[in-house]
Image 1 (cartoon, rainbow, N blue to C red):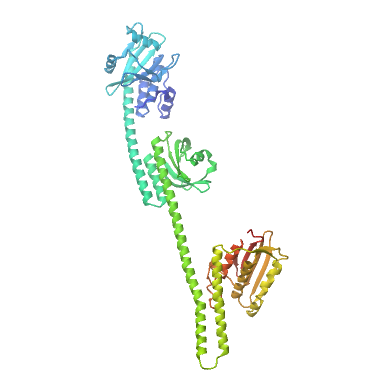
Image 2 (image 1 turned 90 degrees about the vertical axis):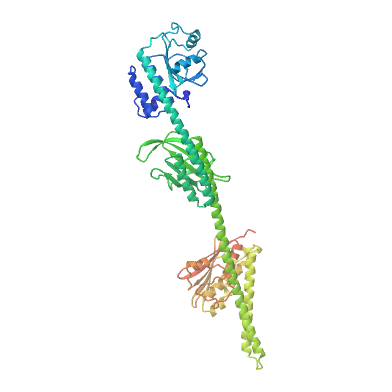
Length: 609
C-alpha cells in the first residue's frame, strides 16, 4: 500500500470531495453522524486513502475543538510515520515524521490489537511511565486519546486526538466517535488494498496485451508491405489496450511544413482524420517532437456535447536514424498522466511504425526502379527492332538493285543504259541513306555519352542563317511549297557550335519539307532577347494531336498518317535534333494548331564551356 503523506493536505481533500459532488462542507459543531456519513461517501466513491485520512483528521479536530488530530501508521518493525495531521499547535507540524517510541513495546501493540484504547486527560496525573510521559511532553501533548486502527486482524496504526494547552476530559461521545472512525478507516484501507490489487492485475493484463500487440505488429510488418494497414492496426489496437478515447498517427511532409493526420481511431465522432496542421503554428508542441522527445500535457477542452473537460495527451515521435517521420498521439479524458510503462509501449510501437514506413518507402522505390528498368528494357527492344528494320530496308533495296543490274549485264543483248542509270542511282541513294543512318546513330551515341566536344565560335545570324534557308529553295519549288525567312531586326552575335547548329536547322527544314502539303508554306523566323536567341521553323497544313507531339522526338517515330516509304530519312532526325540542342545548353519544343506546326528552338547567346 502506497501512502504519501507529504503530498496530501486538508485543502486538497476538500477539493477532491467537491469534485465528486460529496457534501463535506461541515460547519463547526456538526453532528458526528455527518462526519461518518461523509467518510462513508468518500469510501463508496473509491476516493484514494490519503484523501480520506486527511479529511478525517481535519473534520475531527474541528468537531472536537482539539489542538491536534493525527493518524500514525505502524510498519512491521513497530516503528511508524505520521501519515495525516490537522493541527493548530505552534511549531513544526508532525506530518511525515518517522517516530520511534522506545516505550511502545509488544505489550502495548497486543493491547491495541485487541481493541483497547488509551484515554489520558492529563499526562502528569495519569500515572504514565516516565518514558511515555516524557515522549508525549516532547510533542507538546497534555491530553491524549488513542484508538487503534485494525486491518485484517493486525494493528495498522493509531487514530489520535490530542490537547496540548491544558488537560482535557474526553467525553464518551468523543471516544465512541473515534472508535467508529477507526472502523471506517479500516474499511477504507481494505478498499484501497483491493483497488491496488485490481490495478496491479490490470497492469499485468495490459503488459500481456502490450507484449502481444508488439509481437503481432512485428509479424505484420514482416509479412505486410501496406503501410496504411500497419498504421491503422497500430492506432486501433493501441487505443484499445490503453483504453483511451482517441489515438491517431500524423505524418510530416518532406519539408516539415505540415503534419497530416493519416489514420485515426476514436470512440467518439472523428475530429482529426485528414486534418493538416502547420508545424510553425504550434512551436511548443513540435519543437520537442522534432528533436525526438516524447511530449505529455493536460489541458481543458470542449467535448462533442459540448462541455468543458480535462484531457491528457501523449505524443511520441516516429523516427529512425535518418529522419523524423511523424508522431503517435493519444488522448484520454482524465487528468491522470500516462504511466511510464504506457509511454514505453507507445515508444516501442512508434519504433515499429518507423520500420514499417521505411520498409514501405524502400519497397516503393524498388518498385519504381523495377518499372523504370522494364520501361527502359521495352524502349531498348523497341529501338533495336526499329533499328534492325531501318538498317535492313536500304540493304534490301541495294540487294534488289544489284541483282537486277547483274541480270541485265549477263544478258547477251545490248545494255539498256537508262535502266542501268536508274539502278545505279538507286544504289547510290540507298548507300547514302544507310551511311546517314549509321552517322546519326554514331552521333546519338557520342551525345548520349557526352563525348562530343563543343567548338564554340561567334556567328552573325543575319548573314549565317539566310544561305542555309535558301539551300532548300529548289526543293520547295519542286514540291510546290512556299519558303519564307523573317529576321527580327539586327540580331545580336551568337556564341555557339556552328556545326551542331547547322545540323539542327537543316534537320528541322528537311523535316518541314517532307511533311508540308502542296501549296502550303514553310517559315523560318529568328528573334532575340538579352540572354537568348529564338529560331522558329513552321509549316502550314499539318496538325498534330497531343499523343503525336509527346512522341515526336522518339527515335524512329513516324507520324501514323505518313508511310515511311513516302518520306525518306533515317528516322533519327528529330531525336538527334533534341540531343544536339541539349548539347548546346538550349531547349526545343513543338506546338501544333489547326493552322500550322511550329518547332521552337531557344539557345543561350553565350555557352559556358
